[in-house]
Image 1 (tube, rainbow, N blue to C red):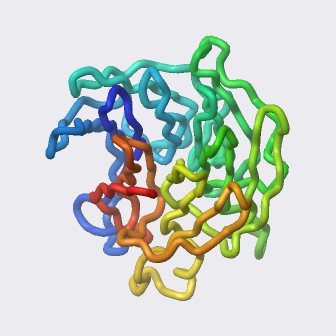
Image 2: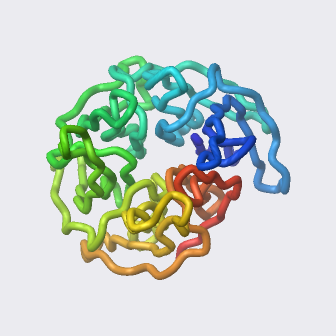
Length: 305
């Protein structure tokens, strides 16, 4: 799904699921255009309208004007579209925003000083490629459109994690592609990078193990610790799809002051391929996958010290 906040309203939109039966039982993937909102004082979600089309697997970014749904794909292919979802009294207005220069899905975004940075992703369906391209949109001057910046020096990647801590942008882990037996094969990445407009890209200590598709933008504590919660650590490769017990149930932390990785302990709800956003003094992780092809309708609140 896409998820973010505007005017104290939590907004979630789009996504896919298998409503009739699970994927492993031959279920058909369904794409949705529905938008839902949740107010801080409410216990129930409100059905708040629809997107211009059913789509998913893009990036989300919360800016002053609303929530951006950036790129993604539908059953026909990958998309350049960008939409702004703005909330008023629980209802949502959908407005077109400057489109991306290229179609991108399975990408990630984060906001630094009012500028939306988009990194990585796949330009074509079927995991035929992944990119290290970087685009930036100044939300205060959207008429300037998306500007392409210097590429990430590391591997092209998708389903990676991003975060902003102390006015620094971070790109962490994800999945790369490599040639194997004449076709593209997934490779989980341990690369970690930081970026500031003044200094550009800096290589950070590698992650102790690879993580992809954890909630992103990743939660950040007040003292600058980035939390990668669950996600895919590659351990599911030793199982068949039917016996897969689910995704990594541990948290991995980057202390951005000491610039060191450490174990953050177990988590209650391991998920993968899901958005995360700050809301009402906490973070919210929306839906995602329990295991490959098995969707969750849970929404989890995350409180960091």
